[in-house]
Image 1 (tube, one colour):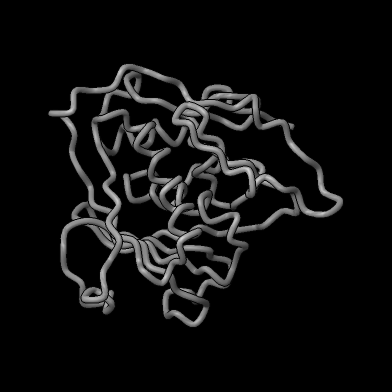
Image 2: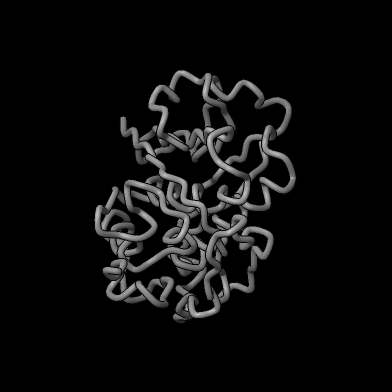
Length: 225
């Protein structure tokens, strides 16, 4: 069983989650905190490589807890769409909203991953610095989102990181999205370093996948400031 924790330090600056290559924009998430800096996010975009043939796709079901409200589900959907663009047809994440019959998440047994909304009282929230906890194996598991520990505007970034773990990426102390400590400035899209780890774990051809490019993302690493 694999358990990963996204240890978090929230900074006081704003975040724009970029999905230019797949026509997504989270303008509400871009508002900077009062007195904080703003960032030119227009410089970031995803590559656009030819998609793999649909017949080669491997589908991974991602079940979304109905405790998430409509706006939260939309933010989770943005994260899944970005990863689908990155995976470029080789693997496809298929979101499914859990229905009332599946309310007992602990007893749900089906292939795929469940994104569950919990709070700080959950047993897996013992690490007070964790924003989310991913537990599972290659067959599936749970992404527990500890929703009372961060503002709603950060939900897409948190899910982007956790889906990286779902797909086999570990933490990269020199990385961007998969850094072990969350910095809102560095979590707005899926960088090459994160994609490279997923490509290795999933045995995918890296150069046929997509990733985010822009200032500070040279060779998949965050450049020194």
